Image (tube, rainbow, N blue to C red):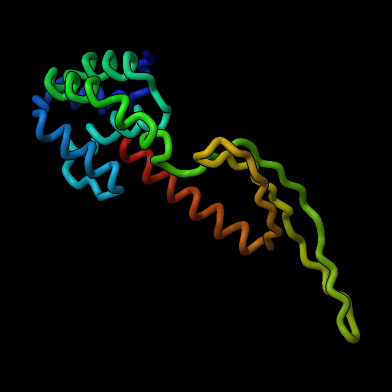
Length: 165
């Protein structure tokens, strides 16, 4: 169990919070239903439970992690007793994962009626692992403006993640 995988502010928040079995169970249900977590404590509980789900953690490791983070004993025992029923559905919760990225720059040449237009572009290839474990390639060609828009969106996503780290 790597407690360091849980963000420090989440560990600190949970160390200073009394989590009830109802809170933990409610957040767990919301995660399984892809519902929004709104309160700060819900978000911190959600980070831990999403980590357990997203890493396909084994029952014993999950129990140790939850105990170390002061989750209610009753919630941990209930989770342990129903683990076999929920373990398989947990592995299908989530999104595909990015495994690798390759890119190369090039020029697209459009030959028009009277002139040629050179458009610099990027060929981007993403290797993605699905929730079923299969790998697949996603390939695309992006103009500078499209790449700029993608980078802007990714920076916004990083900024959002940083708020909870």
